[in-house]
Image 1 (cartoon, rainbow, N blue to C red):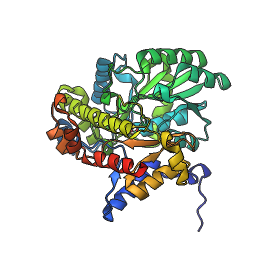
Image 2: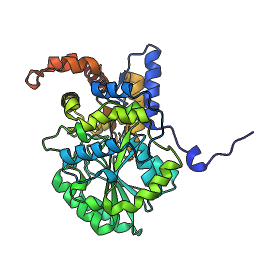
Image 3: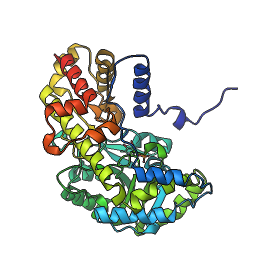
Image 4: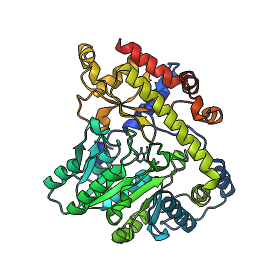
Length: 421
Ligand SMILES: Cc1ncc(COP(=O)(O)O)c(C=O)c1O
């Protein structure tokens, strides 16, 4: 029997990040020496208090309310309010199986076109496509480190007739590592207010911010129209636990009953032991603070090391301020690359993998024009547990120390430099 499949789904490709991960793992298992800079999974162990809590709660077998464990909702609101100056209460928090699923459910249930800056994370576009939603990418500028500017948003909003529009703003950013300044967020907030934009502020990397300024989210300036999402995948290195949350302000409370119904008809609730396991990370942040901050400092070091090497090689690359990604481009080498038949970022990343064994993602997967010769680099191909043990004080971070902490990142840079000669 030939199954007939929903067109919106049958035309989806496997997520680019998961695809490159599988491919790099396969090549490695076949004995190839691969530098895997394609997949953004935090390499560290989950903080010990969370592992203990998960083990101790393995016996919990009941369904939990679809909103999430009340203690966890309260603790999540408490930590985000405390760290970032938000004003959420326990009722505003919705726990889901990863922020990716919650973003999907929100995109599904909210009407209006979905706008995202280009570059943006790979999954937003397919999520809009599943819902047949108009998906608009807003070009940004390298000179602003690809951070969306108010004028760019204003221009796009003016062209949209729909009274309600959605914007996903990811801060700190995957793929660029950039972080918006409070002034930029304030300006964006004004445009959103003026044009009826609901913002999904994807703050999955908020606790990995290592920029010069303390982290601010757009909810600090546009609380009434912002749904903030985050989770435990990045700062707590627990991506496979699948737990995230959405913080829905009182002003958007009408979203809650339909979201709750949607949840009850789909995933029901997040696994109970995982919710208890996550609890110490929020309820007793002091018990994990050292671990989380040390991981953040290591991300900063890896990001700064790669940024420095890329700049030496001659790539253009904004300096990362958070998360674990960089977004270098090879535009300065376009003549050499064109002469080798490389005219798109997809060809660039394919040839880099074939010729040098360095796995990266093409800029086009992040909604950049095909002929933009940029790639997304994840800076996490190292032994997280070992680096967590060996990481020295900041003033001891010499080039030799960087190379010994991050040998595969160093090797990847050597190979790219050699390949461009
Ligand atoms: C920008 C961005 N948003 C959301 C997610 C999803 O995170 P979660 O594990 O909470 O679903 C990721 C994961 O890679 C991400 O990079």
